[in-house]
Image 1 (cartoon, rainbow, N blue to C red):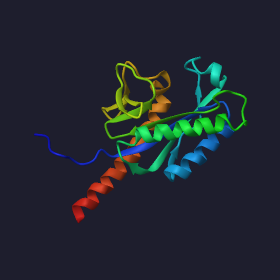
Image 2: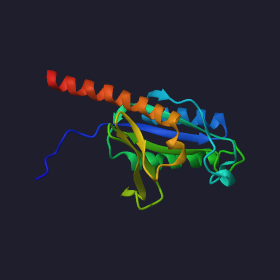
Image 3: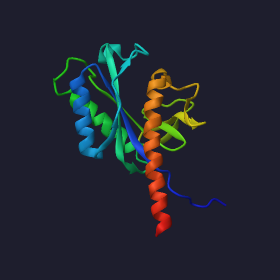
Length: 186
């Protein structure tokens, strides 16, 4: 018989990419207003792994990761992905940029054992959550670091990206350790 266990502690991570630094800055502010303080911001990584986005977003894309400070419920991904879509549409219709899609926002969760990404597209390795949103385990934490799967996107395979996500996981580990220590002292 299954027994309820401790919650799955998660930190919200949102990968923002665009060819426009001002769009990334706009997204950061909009997301901060919704999800609160940001603990970590990655360097801007060049996004050169596919031409899939060229027609809608242009070339010379950069990707920036935002890690939010608060522990979030593990079931928040559908709501966050839906909000990300609304923000993308708001910027697209603002007239500030000529591209059909000037911004892409990909929410995910850092957990102690994995990194999950939300998606609107189904695949064999994705699980349906709700509201037409799926999740995939993009990376697994093994032997002290995030490791890839056969389906892991090329940009998440890069050592610098995984190093940044490892630092986000270390932040989560500190938070979980503090929560557990506070629980034992009560």
